[in-house]
Image 1: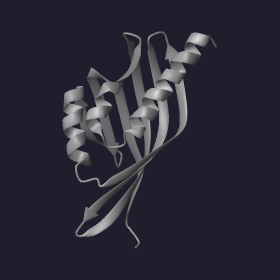
Image 2: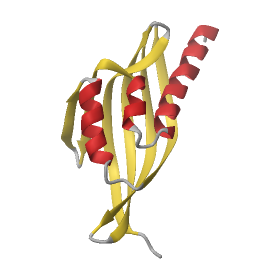
Image 3: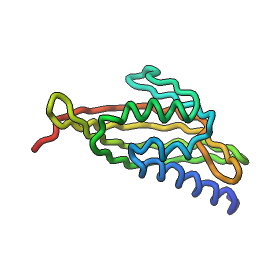
Image 4: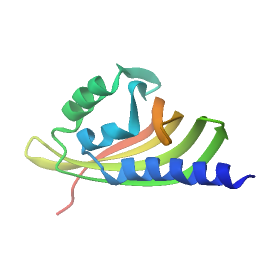
Length: 144
C-alpha cells in the first residue's frame, strides 16, 4: 500500500470522525458533502428519506434533529477502499439521541451502518453518496 493511499485513508477517517464529532450540528456538517450529494436513509428495511443535494440535507436533517436535546456518536468498524480520486467507506456508528416525549426524557439508541461513496475535490475528500441503514433502534425513558 502506497503512502498516498494511506494518507487518503487517514483523510477519509477524519471526514467521518469530524462529521460524527459535530453530532447534530447539521449546518457545520454540510462541508463534508458534495453540493450534489445523494443521501438515502433506510429505517425498518425501508427507504425513509431520499435526499438530493447538500442544501436539502441541511433542511431535512435540521428538521429531524431539532428536538434533540443532547447526542453522542461513536464510530466503530471501518473499511475504506481508495481508487484514485474516488473511495468507498463502510463504517458503523452508535448514535444516542436525547429527546423529550410527553414530558419524559427519552433516549433513542441507534445502531447505524453507513456506506459512503467519496470523491476527492480540490484535494479534499467529500461524501458524494451515502446509504445510511438504521440496523436497530431502541427507545427508552431516561431513568432518574
